[in-house]
Length: 356
Ligand code: CUA
Image 1 (cartoon, rainbow, N blue to C red):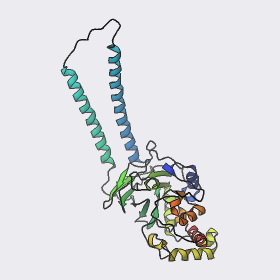
Image 2 (image 1 turned 90 degrees about the vertical axis):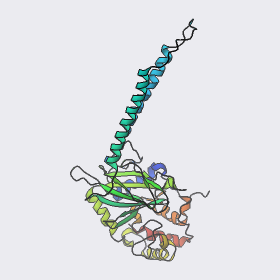
Image 3 (image 1 turned 135 degrees about the horizontal axis):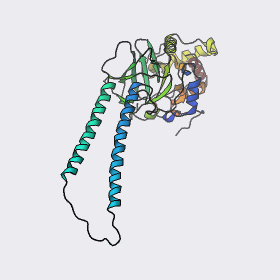
Image 4 (image 1 turned 30 degrees about the horizontal axis):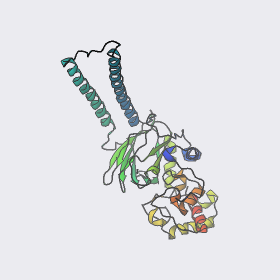
């Protein structure tokens, strides 16, 4: 196996300090804490809260059954143990209508309670249409990254979902339409909602209503091929005004070379490399001839904290190494090694750095 050529941080299972620190440094991700662990036991959104409540009910009932059954078992073993000098067989009793009724009726009642509670929760969570005033987002699963589109805001991004927080005073839910470009994926941000499959030729609707700002991690939760494990998702929940600022910045043209302190000549050469190589077949990039949809939209690449759907932190070194050969970060990734020479790699990286 080829070894990585650069120091890097791989976000395995969403728990790596480097990526977290990078997210905290990012200007847009600075609001609220970064939650490095996808944790269904710390919900911040009503669907995740309902699921946790239901889980506690199920766990309480299961614990009750466990304690009762093992209690009776141990009591019987103790109470009817063989005592010294007692070597005759105990009386063999047969049949008890009371006991038979009890162990038939009680399980039926337990199953009925579980069924009704589950049906109520499913009914609460399932959405068939997007209500008025909710934010609409379309999420498209790809091998192995997430395309994120805000049809009403005219914003397209990837792997990092930005949402407004919902407050008591101004509640705002987000309705996510889930689609797949290829195979079945599963969309899961444990703090915000349950899992929902992302199925080709089908639209699934999932709603979330984050009530705390911060960064939450999610993960594709259905095996979808080689790099299923590196199909991560970051959710950044903003204050409403900050969310609007983010959306406005995403719609605006990317920064110029001067703004980001890179050599304009290098940037122009890099743009040229981008436009005359296979990059344009797979990536959309505003202001260039790139309009492909196989790979992520790069128009504001540098506003994202990771590359390769969480495979590496988005630093200039990692970006350059990724273009040189993305397989060193994410073996099997569908982006080919671009076979560029060192000068072209430098130019292309300089150009990408302007895409704030
Ligand atoms: Cu996509 Cu697993």
